[in-house]
Image (cartoon, rainbow, N blue to C red; front, side, top):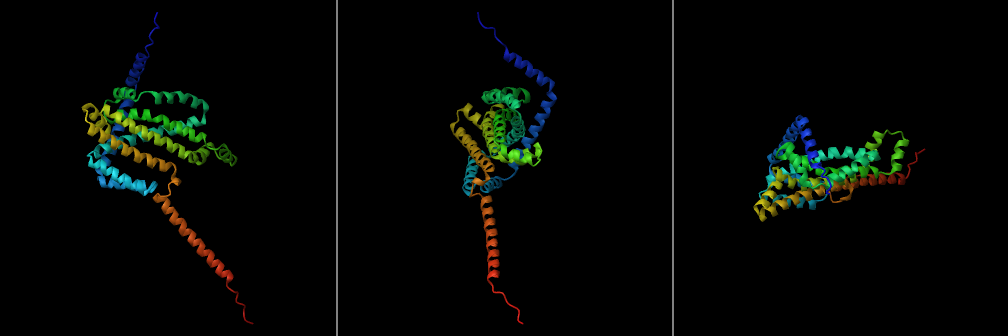
Length: 317
């Protein structure tokens, strides 16, 4: 005698159909909003001449990390231009930026909530495990059923897939703050809100930035799969390369994705640990300013010592 089949998939379809019919107005609002924001961002990126975008990205790399990253970024982006994939690269970048911003806006408050309550953390943990282990392709099914094809289903699936690391790292960062530091703030009468804003979040910033870094990397990996649901960009080129067995296009599109991923990875890592990169433009400016102030201090001390060593002039009788 066989075990009776439990129709979980059928129940899920019933629940999904109910949600879609009941909240169709909300789905329409989300679709229009995300479509408008993403298209506006992509159009803005494409409206700027590519040399200007490359210069800005190179300056950001130098400002936050090193001149080597700036040079490497400029040469890598020029390579994308030479492969005639600049438009697709900007489309992918726009999708990733929108998805990352939404994921971070959701992840940080949820991570704070989990860090403040063990019960909430216990509830979130299996949900996040489920979201991370579910095959990425599965997220594309409800995304297409809700939002049809284009950028929006890609963003929807990307946010769900990339959200868990942001929540986990935020919780980890806040829980990792030294309890004595928090108790010192409480001893001075700081409210929980002030402790969170003034102590916990600043000290947890490197860990939170590591989570954002992971969100960006997962968003880029999901952006490729978004090409299967009609999202423009490098993912669509990869899909075309696979379906048409066009190895050169696959290599070029894949390399372009790697270039964007490496740049975003290095920049977010530098934002999380700003003091670790002595060759960044910010570090060089600070060093020059400190040397100038030190020189002024030494000059003032020499003036004081000279005044002390100068013999006193006694008044004549």
